[in-house]
Every structure is written in C-alpha cells, then in structure tokens.
Amino acid sequence: MSEGIAQPDRPQEPDGGETDLFSKFDDIIAMREGLLSQGREDPFNLVMEQVLSPTRAICNGRETILLGTYNYMGMTFDPDVIEAGKQALADFGSGTTGSRVLNGTYQGHKECEDALREFYGMDHAMVFSTGYQANLGIISTIAGKGDYVVLDIDSHASIWDGCAMGKAEIVPFKHNDIEAMEKRMKRIPEGAGILVVLEGVYSMLGDTAPLKEMIRIAKEHGAMVLVDEAHSMGFIGENGRGVAEDQGVLDKVDFVIGTFSKSVGTVGGFCVSNHPKFEIMRLVCRPYVFTASLPPSVVATAATSIRKLMHGSNKRAHLWENSRTLHKGLRDLGFELGTEEPESAIIAVIMPDLEQGAAMWEALIENGLYVNLARPPATPANMTLLRCSLCAEHSGEEVEQILAIFEKAGKAVGII
Image (cartoon, rainbow, N blue to C red; front, side, top):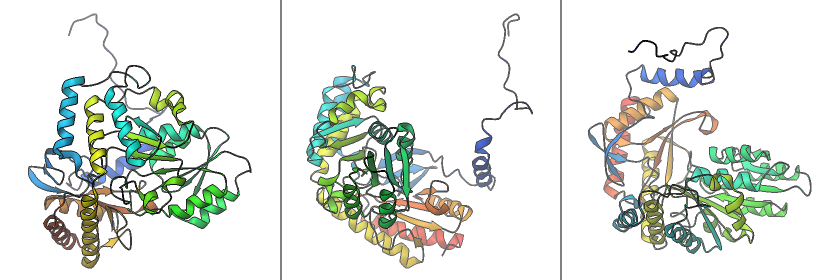
C-alpha cells in the first residue's frame, strides 16, 4: 500500500461514550443466533437454486414442493405471461429509468391499468412499483394530519407505515371485532375526516374480514373505506375480485389496494377506485411521484396475467378444493390450525413455540417441503406459525404428499 495516502479508519466497537445504533435489534440478533447455534439452517434465508414450476424448486440440491410462495393462481410459468414479458423486453428494453410523472409511463403501463379497470369494473386504476408502496402512498396521501385512520390491530406493516407517514390519528381495534370497531368509531369527533382500512384476507392466519358489517358501520359514520385485497384478488369472489365482491359490498368500497406479487405472479402494486377526483393522486402521492416505474416486461406480464384471471373460474375451484383437503388433512393429523374452516388459500399451522417451530420447519425442508416460518412480533398474539399458501397448480397428488411429509415431520419433532 502506498505511503502518504490517507486510509479510512477501521470501524471501532462502540465505547462507553458512543451509542450503538444496532442495540435496538439485540433481542432479534439473539433469537437468530440461538436458532443457528443449534446447527439449523436459517429459515429466513432459504436459497432456491432453481425454480422448476409454480409448485416445485431445487432447494439445497433437493427437489422441493413449494407451499409458501403466495403464488396462488400459479401464473409465474404461464406461457402467455412469459411470452408477453419477453416481447416487451425486446421491444421496450429493460427499464424506464424514470417516474410515472416524467418519462416512466410506457404503453404497457396504460394497458396494465386498463386491465385492472376492466377486472374490477372501476373507473380508475393506478399502478405502483410495489404493493407496499401502494398502501404507503394511498393511505398517507388521503389521510393526513387531523384526519383519523381506523384499522384492524393485525393490519399489514405497509398499512401501519402509511398511517405513520401521513401523520393521521390512528384508531386501532381488536382483530375482526365488529363491536370494538363500532365503539372506536363513535369516539371520533363529529365532522372529522375518517378512513377505515380493512383487509380481505389477513396473511398470518388466513382468516377473512366481516367486510359487510364493517363497511356498513364505516358508512354510517361518514367514513371512506379502503380494502386491501392482496391475498384474495384472483381467487376469492365469483370474478376473483376479492372478499368485498364475495360478500356483496364491492360497490361500497372507495379504494381497493392489491399487489401483483401474489395471484398475478410478478411484482408491483395497484389501487382501483370510482372516486371522481382520484386522478389527482398521480400528482400528490409521493411514493408514486418519486419512484421509478415498473420495467416494461413486468407490466406486460401483469396485464396478461390479470386478463387471464378474468377467466380463471376453473383454477379458483381447484384451489378451493386444495385448501379444503389440506385443512381437513392437517386437522385430522392433530395439528392446531389458525382457522376452524378454510377461509382462503392460506393455512396457518400453530406451533408450541419458536424453537419447536424452527425444528418443524427444518424437518419439513429436509423432507422436501417448503413453508414459511412466521414468528413474533410479526404474528398475532406472539404465536409461532408455519404458514402454508396453496397454489392452483398443486395437484391432488401433491397435496397428499404434503400431508404425508407433515405427518412424518410432526411425529419426528413431537408436535403430533
């Protein structure tokens, strides 16, 4: 190394007079180190070496059934979807390098929004670069300082972050508790701006919201309603429009938020609405204005997938069959589940604690089955869950294989 060239000082461990900004994460660091110190594989850093289909991948050199991908309708390998992406990549290049309000709106972005408007039968559609940004942007822009956001205590992180960014007053209520929600609504000052935020399907337990009753209460108090249908779009409802459609209240919802990273099979987020002033959001919503738009290949795959989902009734029926079969099979084996009956494509298997949950996860992956290990504080009531998400492309034979692997692993770990 040449003399006379100043070299940056090496980072030093914090001493008594220096604050360690990582200290807030010490509990999580200890939890992770505790799991890994037992020689276990890191359940939060699995590498898929090769993806073979919507339901199979090579993990740790072994062919593995995928039961934790949110690929509900199996669109990731649809030939038409893939071909649309290839063509857009060839015609428009790899990216837009700009925001939607500058140079980042290509023909594909408009076609994707057209597909969403047609899918939902609504007047307006706005595509974001991620589903997280859709919630962050819409909620923070609509509900600002002095307004009130009424939301379920188990709402997704993107919903909470949207509330924080907008600086509205947050009014949480007990999960799926209609009476608790109504009590909170009655305490809000008369004349205040109110946004009620609900989810069609809650991603941890896979349970659905009583939207019909909750939307009625919201409207009685003069509130606008936003429903996040990320985990129901494409699957639930006669046309796959989500729980609001299934419960007959879609026409009473002011804003529907969704994502392309579940049933649509790619990445991105969106909001659809019938509000006559909605288009102004394109100029005032910061996560939309100040983010580069989705690559042309992504919006092309999304638009193609959305249009195919309009005619996905057979796939939806098969996915419901898979969900009922797996739910009943796991319950009959003696596992404790998050719902009494299957309410969505998510089935949560409740573990006694994190240590046994990690052991069970490892036993499953070693036997060729991948699920999600979900832990506190992300889970309700500090539960440890093995979260299973079914796919319309899972065959009946694969569902039986899944049950056999759960039985073998559960007995080996001592869960059942």
